[in-house]
Length: 299
Image 1: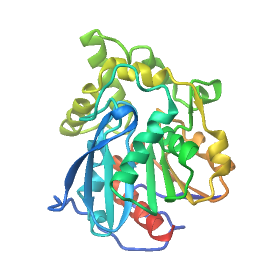
Image 2: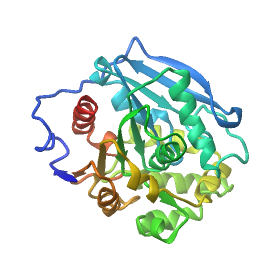
Image 3: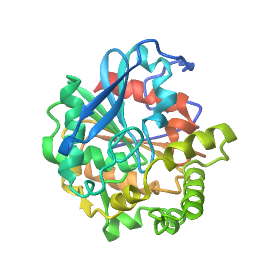
């Protein structure tokens, strides 16, 4: 196990030194696909760039749009970035009752990998997306996976240990995530968006994020929270390199969670981001993109 620490605007010293600039670029080679996942749920997928595939799995009540600072960066000159909307989110299908079974989540990710003919994949799972990545590993193993980057991720839900890894301010919001009262639901989403970063968001970013959070129906958010899943066995059995990325000021998933995961994984490196919250890929995109690039090159 290794550990990295550096200011969010600088690459971590342990990684190979590299001068990097990540300009925002609108990709001409960006495509959208519809992939049919578990139980015939349609999944909307963004596909940009070329090279080794990197599949970006977003978190709870989010969307593939959260990866904008990666998809619109020069990462796509070297890697093929694949970003699906999870079931119930964004432009993907939103069935009423199809979220509890881990096999459905595993089959969704498997469908993206097989239908887009991806091999030697780097899986990136942010927050709840970490649970989805480990759902996949439970059912399909790591035969097509080269490495995993868990970003402020959860590996379990619905257990006492899982709750201990969550921040108290986030826990205070949980009961209102499934509210059907418009004012209460909107205010909860506003508070959640603000909680996902350490510093105050510019208004444009805040409402961009609020928009794709509100698109997720309350019944989906409630169903996602109702799961009881533990992936300790999958962490113990991982036989590929894992990069654990975590903001030191994460108020949603406490930074200590990544250290606990690292203790269970044979080949794990922890990268902590000072003065950063739950969204290091958005808050510190230059460092995040650099570390993702270096990780994807070496696995």
